[in-house]
Amino acid sequence: SLSAPALASTFTDAHGNEIELDDSLEAYANEALLGAEDAARKAETNLGDLWADALRWFAVSGNINAAVDAEHVVALWNAGNLRANIPAGKFGAAELAEVLPYPNKVAVVYMTGAQLAEALEAASQGLPYTEESAAACASFMQVSGLSYTVDLAQEYDTGEAYGDNWFKAASLRRVTITDVNGQPFDAEATYAVITSNANYNGMDASYIFPEAVEANEKSAVTTAVVRDVVWQYIAEALHNVVGEDYAAPQGRITLISAQ
Image 1: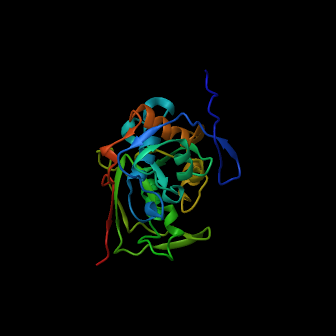
Image 2: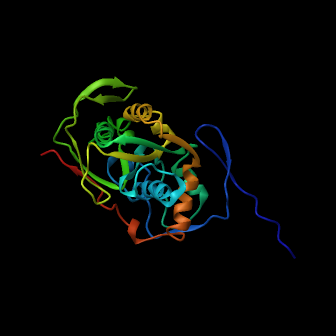
Image 3: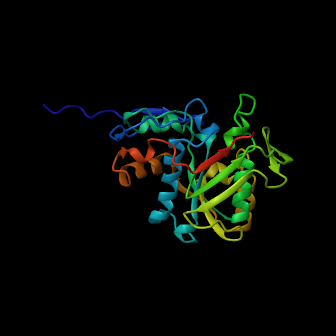
């Protein structure tokens, strides 16, 4: 006899929206992908790498008609929007919803290299992570398409207050971008930064994002849902197996400890 079709489960996101999940989606992770217990607020994580890679992949695969070449496309994802682990083994849409319980959309912000460096400087202000700086560390950026260092021996140069937990960067002291897609960083070049609508609108320490949006009319929020894009990347680019490439952080972010 024919069995009854499985009912789709639902998930209520952090904004109170009830989302229907596609229970047919299934993938496999060789290792646990870390986002719980503020892991992504403390340092680079394998989940942060995966998430940012999905956003960059979405753009360079032609889903966003970027106004720059692929070598100038990067992705930034704030650590506060990675909320759970994906355990080793089988996982599906429910696990992705636990990681990101927000209805974020993919956005592209065109900014200069100088603005990109300032964005990362501001995002680093809560480091090193402590219980007292945990809220500020929500702005810390996981990345794809670039590598950078944060010199924790250098104090953040606190400028004008921005929101409840952050300050604008009065100067750039801590962050050095070491390369962009294997090429030298250019402070005067234009980069397409793939991120969320929340950062586009200036969430956390992302004050430079709306400033860049205002300066470049090609910046936009797409209709693509971030969780859907991450799943699309896992399915199409990784063939439903998050393998050895994501067994550990890939060395994109170097934190230089204060002596």
